[in-house]
Length: 437
Image 1 (cartoon, rainbow, N blue to C red):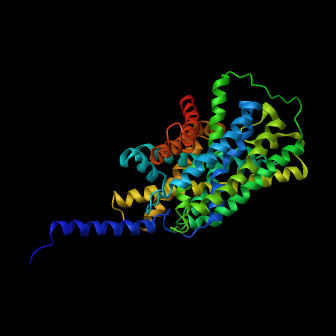
Image 2: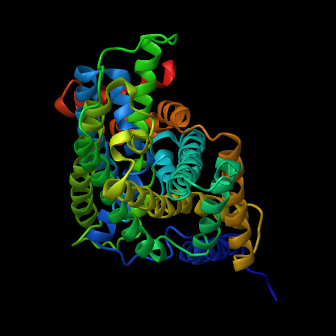
């Protein structure tokens, strides 16, 4: 009996690979479920964008000053909304093809290998660093609550930030059991509500506190140069707009047809999300700086807790509620940023290293990642420095200029036309932030 011709063998093998790939896509956390809609997009994006960065905006304003601070705050909102729109538009820019992951879009623009080398390291750094910062911030908020409700407990001083990071991390070991993006929708919705809650409490409590005595708004007299502090503040601003690193992954959960492409509900949700972002960011940044001036802490809630006017009564309880809201929000934010990392690692383990797609593999990968970010957070519990470094080094490129570069490569707008100029103007300044940081 004659064997199957070699060409037929190749076709058969290709069919098997495609079938395996299709089944794998049904198992991986990003593409396992595609039944989301516009309001899923809205609260996922709010959870992704309004994170720990909002608490550091008043401090960034104190480094920039009133004029530059307001300009950078507004420009960041406008430019990131524009690049957000670009990412959404490019998700299905080729008929019959969806770029479900950031690196897939990068590969389309830069080539199969170069796209991976450019995007994957940056995206992994963004998502891992966000999870580390959320570990630190969650631990700080737990410590702040403990300090406020245990003032008379002499043992309070024996508990260090590392103990509270461990407590916060325990929640992530549990939540990481949720299998895909849509399965964390309930957690993400609660997290989005909490982000609005603590942001509102932060600026309302600041107004109630009133302007501090002898407040100053000029450039600080510190050993660090004004220029370095200025660019550090730009890095902190960049950290506050990190949702681009998961925008394609969120859009991948929305069904799409030629008549109703996923970009419509995704953009609708993004607009709602950015309105909420403006409601959270602008009052916290401007009012927080107005009230505390140059003495504002790198976390606005620390400044409120340290104010003698707010240490008693109802306002003190509101600050406790704000810290609780931060913790709940960060539980969801951590998962939103961790899910693409889980997706990458699980994909590599199955495709390259031929592991079977089992629950044991899934839980081992996820618990290892949670443990790793927890360990780094315990070793580097410096909130302000982390915001500045990660914001300038990894968040700026993936949020500001890489979407613009990909747009220029794939869309090929007319040279010196409006789209061409906007993308060069939007993408070039953030490159300087990275170099200086």
